[in-house]
Image (cartoon, rainbow, N blue to C red; front, side):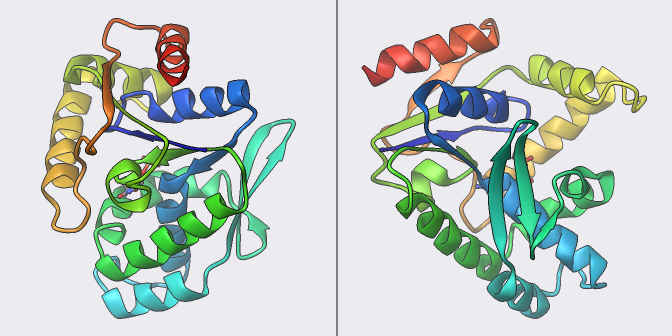
Amino acid sequence: MIITLDGPAGSGKSTTARMLAKRLAAVYLDTGAMYRSVTLVALENGVDATDAKRLDDISSKISINFIEDENGQRVMVNGRDRTVEIRTPEVEKLVSTVSSHKVVREKMVHLQREIASKHPKVVVEGRDTGSVVFPNADHKFFLSANTEVRAQRRVTQNSGSGIKTGNMVQEIMERDEKDSTRQVSPLMVPQGAVEIDNTNLSLDETIERIIRLLA
Ligand code: DC
């Protein structure tokens, strides 16, 4: 069984997908972490985020594995635990550009399908998982929330970084625009997906709603 969860930044996808996978005893596949991994390797090898040829090479050779342990999910990139490094501001800044390359996306989509094929139950989270990666998924969801709420969630998540909510609203609007208008696999509500606006829902309420819809 494949369940896809797509949505914009700050829509709560990651936490929802992780908890949903736990509730269903399913594997959680974080596709954003895979684009972050390619970005990290590019950064460490001095490869420019616009260099499609070298990014293609990195994407072809990279090994990405997810390991569950008592601290949650670890992301192993080329055999090393890079869970923390893929979330740095340097990676954050470039991942949008890296993930917009067709060659990179093709390689990651192939890997995502390969990983999913090895497990009976998978919750996949990303931007194109219900539209491009698994168009025939058993259940598809699209999470959203209003911009201010998403910005506030991100500010809370990054507390201590000094980012103000107003600036985050701007950043989120720019990211939405970039993700929705890019040529390859833009962010969209996949055909057949159930849209859940969680502006006024808690995490538990969002998960309960999804579980009811699976029945
Ligand atoms: O969900 P996240 O913030 O970890 O995603 C990081 C970046 O990867 C984000 O800018 C969009 C991109 N991404 C994508 O293009 N397609 C996906 N399926 C998942 C993420």
